[in-house]
Length: 164
Image 1 (cartoon, rainbow, N blue to C red):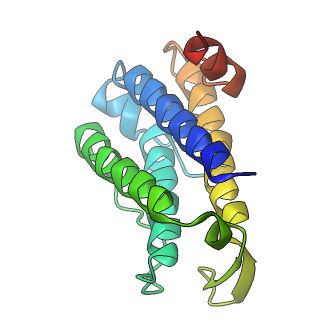
Image 2: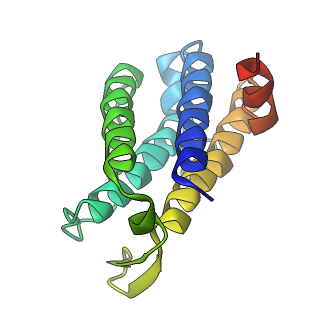
Image 3: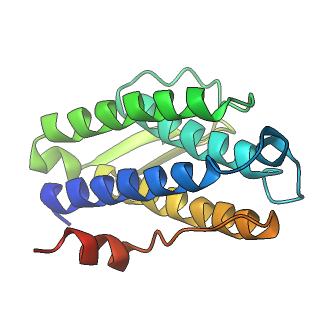
């Protein structure tokens, strides 16, 4: 995978996240915060988890990981949107600044349990997008459970919309 391929995946991730956030905007505050027994409780807490994981990975890559783990505090949808916008800008700027060979080199980090791992940076970035995709799927299912309209965030749908 090349740097350009990864930039495309980050663009997809931003597109899909924005679509989910728009769909979630139709929920009431009660629906947004309701614990419906999903892996992170409900819609809002799952979105906070996705954002927190993205923030954690970027902080690791920037050498700013303080070992504090993932953010778990419930955030309003508006606050989450704003933080995600800033995070997307930081992620893209970080990736654009890297030489191709650095993406293909191993990078060590500590997981949330303090264990040290090392994978190619590009693989860690692929994981970030895949992790977000997995949990957006959970949010789509929760939207349906709450009687709201889910949206299609499939990668192929992104490619279809972006192709000339």
